[in-house]
Amino acid sequence: MIIGSHVSFGKEQLLGSVKEAISYGANTFMFYTGAPQNTIRKDIDNSLTKEAIKLMEDNNILIDKVICHAPYIVNLANNLDSAKYDFGINFLKGEIARCESLEIKYLVLHPGSSVGLERNIAMDNIIFALNKIITKDTKTMILLETMAGKGTEVGSSLEEIKYILERVNIKDKIGVCLDTCHLNDAGYDMSKFDLFLKMFDDMIGISYIKCIHINDSKNILGAHKDRHANIGYGTIGFNSLINIINNETLKNVPKILETPYTGNNEEDKERLYPPYKFEIDMIKKGEFNSNLINDIKEFYMVK
Image (cartoon, rainbow, N blue to C red; front, top):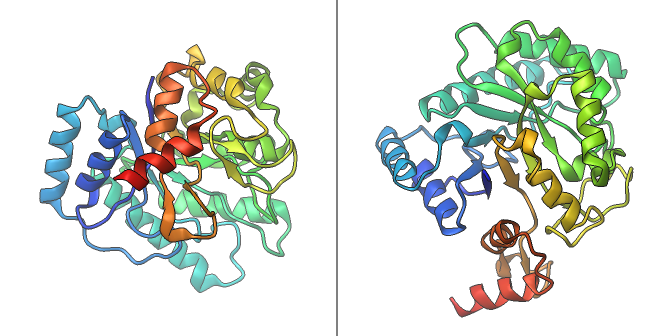
């Protein structure tokens, strides 16, 4: 089982990310190389990267299974503001260069939102941008994330993902990141994952799946809202998510938790705690923990 979660990338950069992942009992992880809501980035410290790679080797974390995520404010679907569009393209080229310096193989990307444009034009904008970004020398693969369909998001249907993938010139540098919450909210029933996987294979090909975000959903099927819930505490449910994690066809695909921090009061951001140590333990045991939220609170409050 290749299981991990989103972790931070702070003062110690990749080294800090590895330490955090180890503290959760994970053997993979996902990170942003800076804040996800902006494009401000600090230079990569190669000495910290070397330490991080050594620590991964010592703790059986395969760097080939580690995931980076592009900031979600980059929108390749809309080119009405040509300066912003060009900035997004150039920024993602820089993110790929940062990933390559960190020896990270995969970069997850939200396809973007049409925001006033026709959908086919928005998809063509994404394709044009990807073909500018990805070259024969690119080492890091871009993974298009399946989206919930909130607002004017592109990529909430397999048809749209297929349309984009088919038109990217360099096929071995593009893949897909499934997100279980997004898929549920887009209308795909995760309790029938084998049927979904067959449909995906028939339309796109299973080999394109390189990462899965494992998240429960606070929303009903097809709600198009994108609100993540803790594992087993949403409408998808523990058993359906465990079946996805343990799917034999996807056993070598890294699974990443992006579930919400929890605490006494969800509005009190200062007292919210990461659930990942406990969710990963629950997943490894294959048993739902109905006391998960209290266990998280007690652990971090005591510490």
